Length: 258
Image 1 (cartoon, helix red, strand yellow):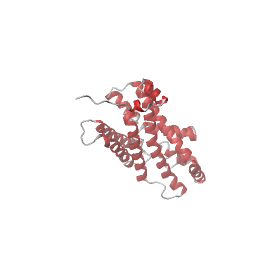
Image 2: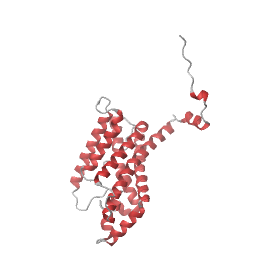
Image 3: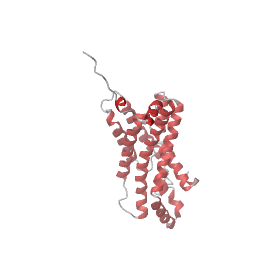
Image 4: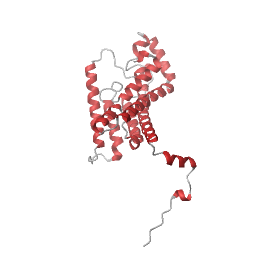
């Protein structure tokens, strides 16, 4: 029995020259590194963009006396959806680490190269930073109105701007003056531990209860619960989201945002 003749599509319909050049170089180390960093950037951008946008509306609603702009449930849903999209985009390319904490954990548990970890962390923070700046540009008119309302309120703008109830609190994660920092640390530790356990459970190939297609949904749900339990806006759960948002607040409102 003769072997069937295999005909490649490129033999019938040749690729464009640009695609030929891409095929030639796409497996080079520099392009692979760029693609991995771009995947981390886009992934963090997606979930920060979704979560911060929802959180900002939640803050602006009471200030502007507008009902129905956002809710606690919407914030959790936005972060969950953002995480699902982020993991779906980044997981096939970079492993979908999307967090400096997870990236550092991979260095110690998976033997990930240190230089690669540094590249990932920088692009993760940059993704959060750009997402926050874009949210500010899109909602700037409402933010300016809210700042005007707070300026006329007792205590002035500075008394509320850098708090969880102020516009800057949607970008940088600030605490209300007088908050017990020990309990804040406990909230952060427990929620981050839960997320990490679920992430590594998803990565366990012997875990038959979490098939590959369900990984984004499980991780997204874990983040939603982590945001839901303490109170949205007072937990970071990701250094890239925290530091990137804080840098964005400093870019917008100056060094007082630190």
